Image 1 (cartoon, rainbow, N blue to C red):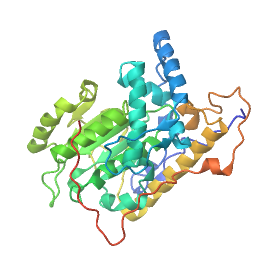
Image 2 (image 1 turned 60 degrees about the vertical axis):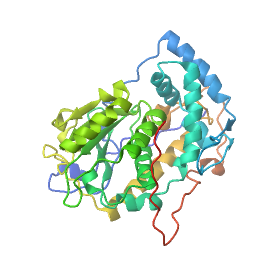
Image 3 (image 1 turned 135 degrees about the vertical axis):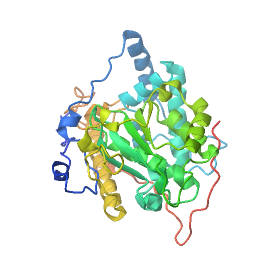
Length: 372
């Protein structure tokens, strides 16, 4: 396979970080100094490697993705596995699912197929920036900065809620999780979730309904396993404390261990990466301007997706490809000894599926499904 020189995966953050007086309004890739601190992957034991090899062989044999018979309005029907779905089945993806099932390889195979079906049913690949845009006009979610191990920071500020409960709010969260994964530097697989429950003048009770909360928790735990590195939560009012007590039984014990409440976030995040508006200890002056931030975020993520797709194609379009290679941290993938793959223009297409909001209509509020 012809070696692919990785594009700079750690382009420096804007010069605004160097001057406290300058305000940043757009996201950026991980600075080199932070990307260099991403811990190396944990080596598999001999037994784990045997189970991984079994799972890889099974995943490479996936031919059809079957959506659930009772799926409500699946965005993509059952059918042959696509290139994008095969690219999603990376080495690290398989290992994340193995860890989530405590290396029960047969259960992992089942979980992978369930997630592939769910991604079709939910329409993850078809959620467009234009469709999601109204949900983020106030900046209630933003992606900017990285913690001390290179985890991208995903800010949630429920006090900036600007829409009523609907299925699009769930789609919004999934859309942003997909984007935060695209901002991860090579070798990093987890995100840092920062939640500020500071109340606004118009929003006092900022916790979601129980049904929607359970749906979101089910999505994150079932379809994004081993993605949460740490959750830092501040300004928790008593009513939200009660909400956390209600949802704790639905959380995996390992997830609960990652929650930190009302702590100084600079214990985990360099001040120059932490928004001073979010917590005073931060030194990063970040201001959310939807007209500037939203197109910049999506342009950056479009570029990242195109880069990774090009590497995957050049590497031979292999199931089980290394994310370190795909993310630009290595010059060759796992098929380096194989003949170079022919790259065709049609192979590089990304984001072909679309879900468009009907013009002139507000999306109808839809009662969130209760997770099984």
